[in-house]
Length: 193
Image (cartoon, rainbow, N blue to C red; front, side, top):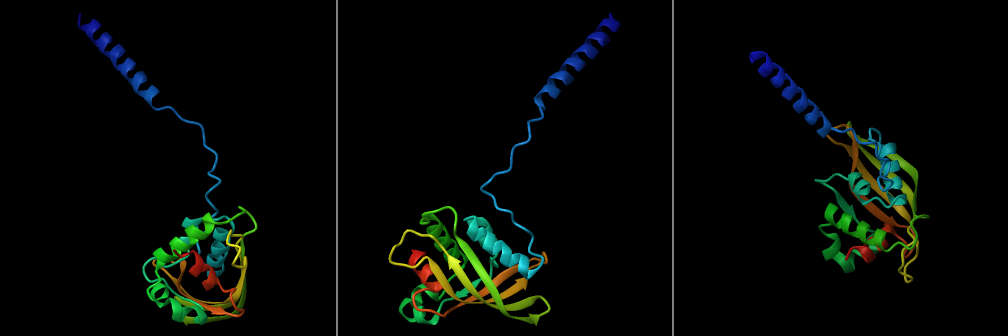
């Protein structure tokens, strides 16, 4: 009788193990999500700027936001747009940055052809973990507002710093207008609300 109980227990145990194993089925590998861009850890300022270009080209809000210092980010617009819009620009934060990029991406008429070209003019070490980048930009955004250009040009001045993970982030951004009504600030102003 005891042998039957031990044999029955062993059989019961084996059935329980098989039943539990059937709960853990290996599922097939899913293809990568095509809406996620190729974010590269910005261990160099050039990688950071490339991430910014890629986020714009791929219309990826999340990766666009990852380019900026989440705590200390500040934006200074082109001087010609500041005075009449002080309340908008005065405390521009990363949340404002997210709002305008979501709005402009939502207004794009084509999923392709949007691009950012940066050409470095000057690069200076500020401290051991920060740089001052000055460059010219050409930003093409194929938005739906016919009263506004789709090619924005100007000068970009960035304070780029390393965070605690040794990744570079944009902490401060100043926009300088080089042609009337075609600065990046003009696009931000139109789509921030």
